[in-house]
Length: 142
Image (tube, rainbow, N blue to C red; front, side):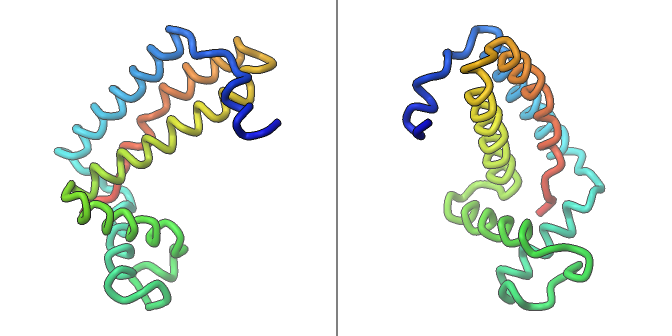
C-alpha cells in the first residue's frame, strides 16, 4: 500500500472517536495545568538538566547523570529548548504540545492501519488510547 493511499483507504473517524480524541486532549491539558502549578518529583528534572548541559557543552561532553542515562532524550530536549526560545514560549508548553501532537498522530496512524479491516477494533483503540494522554503530564521542569 502506498503512502498516499494509506489515508484515503480508511474510513473516516466517527463522532464518538472524535469525542474521545477531544476529551483526551482536554484532559491532557488539564493535567498539564495541574503539573505546571504542582510540579512532579520524577526524574524529569535530570533530563532537563542534561539537555541544558548538552546545549552548553556539546553532545559528547560529560553531562549530569550521563552515567545513568542515554543521550537521546536529552538531545531531543535540547532541540525543544532551542525551539521554545525561537518561538518565545515556555519550554514546558512547547514540549508538552509536541509530545501530544506525536501521541495523537500515532493514535491516528495505528487506527488507519487497523480501520481498513476492523473498523470496530479501530474505534475501540482510538477511544482507549485517547484516555491515556495523562502519561504526557510528566514533563521536565525548567
